[in-house]
Every structure is written in structure tokens, then in C-alpha cells.
Length: 318
Image (cartoon, rainbow, N blue to C red; front, side, top):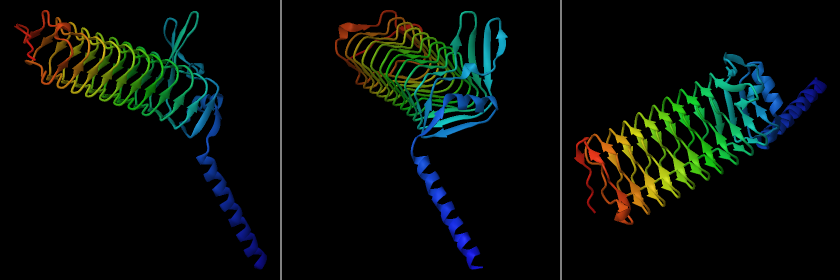
């Protein structure tokens, strides 16, 4: 009986040691190859990695795709993908253009990169995300591509950091889009986007040229305390819901030329250090809130053909 008890205690100690080893391994960053992730996805397995370093290029277009239109292939991923506090050493690609073919990716489940770091190119051009898309606190060292992507659920890019250019041209956000506290170091391209739900850009910071021309905001858009350090273009934009620009800062020229405002509009306490172009704008629900507007030089204000309720000329008093 004594040797049985000793064996039991020894095995218990070994298990405890293994448990502590596993616990310590979880704290350190695990090395995982991109090829291993691709193999698991090809098997239909969900991906959940935390505190991992991903080596090699994670090219999702290497997975089998379906021909949907002439030379256009789509890879469909039916598994949930979640990365938390992971570092990607290589490229992360969901789009690839060859000499004669194009490959894009559709994600039928959720797609999450939470507080991750991307060292090289990130290209999700033309992607479709059916579930939640989460990129909060994520850091991108190189250019980021989401052109013509479709987000059918909420998309969260809050507190994300972009060191280089950001491409979101012609994207479709079916529900809420969250860019609060985002920091964009390069050019921000949002031309022709459609936001089906609320678009939150509050406290975001744009260090280079920001282009929101021809965007359609179907619900509210919130730009409270947002900073634009270079030119900001919101020309020919459709604001169907509320537009809130309380406390915004525009250090260079800002243009809202030809835009149409259907909802309550506030430029309250915003500062324009250079030109403000409101020419050709129409405010359908009445005079916008321009209280405490800080315009450095009134000569740089363009109200040519700006109107309230289609017929009344827009007039501002300072």
C-alpha cells in the first residue's frame, strides 16, 4: 500500500509540474507557422490563438477557391477566426491578383484580430465578412487594403493604429462601423463608402490627407473631437442621419462642397485653421448648429450656393 501511495504522490507532483509548465508557456509568446494555420482552416477548424508570433505569410487565397465570375475566385472560410495579442511577421493576405486571375475571400463566421501587430502588408481587398469584424487596438506597420470589402455585421476598428496609407474605397458597412480613437499616419481613403449603420470616428486622428468624398452615411456619423492635421475632403457626401462634429480640429483646408445634409447637423465648437468650403451644400432640416465655431480667417469661408431647405441661402454670423 505504501508504494501505491508514493506512486500516487509522485504522479500528482508530475502533473502539477506539467500544469505549471503549461501555464508559464501560455504567458510567453508561442511561435506558430502560417502554414499550420492554413492547414487547420482547410480542415474547417476554428482558429483561436493568443500571445502568438505568426511566422511566414498567411495567404488565405492559397486555400481552395470557387470560380464565381470569369477569372474571379472566392475562397470561403466557414470557421471562426480569432487572434488576440498576436504578432504577424509576414504578409496577411485575403486578396491576390495574378496575371489572369483574381482571388478574394469570404468569411462566413466572425473575424477578430484583437490588439494584434502586423509587420508587413495587410490586404483584404474585396473580402466579405458575414459575422462580426473586430480589429480593436490593432497596429499596422505597412499599408492596409480593404477596398470594395463588405462588412455585413458590426465592424470595430477602434483604437487601431495605421503607420501608412489606409484604403477603404467603395466599402460597404451594413451595420455600425467603429473607428473611435483610431490613429491614421498615412493617407486615409474612404471614397465612395456606404455606411448602413452609425459611423463613429470620434477622437480619431488623421495625420495626412483624408478623403471621404462621395460617401453615403445612411445613419448618424460622429466626428466629435476628431483631429485632421492635413486636408480633409467630405465633398458630395450624403448625410441621411445626424452629423455631429463637436470640437473638431481642421488644421488645413476642409471641404464639404456639394454635400447634402438630411439630419441634425452640428459644427459646434469646431476649429478651422484654413479654408472651409461649404459651397453647394444643402441642409434639409434647417440651419446647422455653428455656435462657437472658430474660423481663423472668415475670408476663407465659401458659402457660394449653400442653402437651407433648398431655397433659403445659408448665412453664418460670427
